[in-house]
Amino acid sequence: MRTLVWLFRAAVFFTLFAFALNNNEPARIVWFFGYEWRAPMVFIVLVAFALGCAFGVFAMVPSWWRQRRVARIAGAATATPADAAVAAPTPPPEPMLPPRDGL
Image (tube, rainbow, N blue to C red):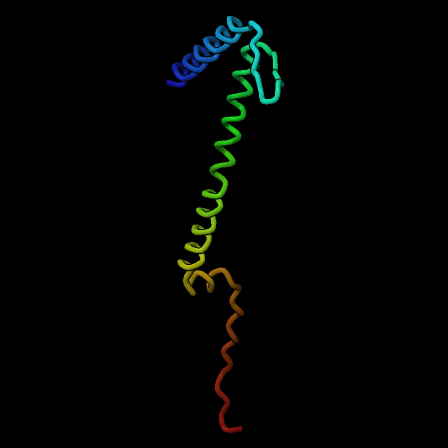
């Protein structure tokens, strides 16, 4: 099964690599106020992909923080005194002394 997964990954990589080699003609992106960027098509696609990934990660950060905060609060609420007693060291028991006879 691992071999099939690696063969699939290699096929996807070589397909995308061949796509990049076939799309190396220059392209241009026209921005506002007459600015333009000329670059090979593969670089433009790569930059668009990287910006999309970065945007997705930054969009998920507040949700991740909220989930971590909820998990931390839930973990603290489920801690029982028995768990705290196990974690804290207990003093050794006092030695048993024989009873003293009226002296």
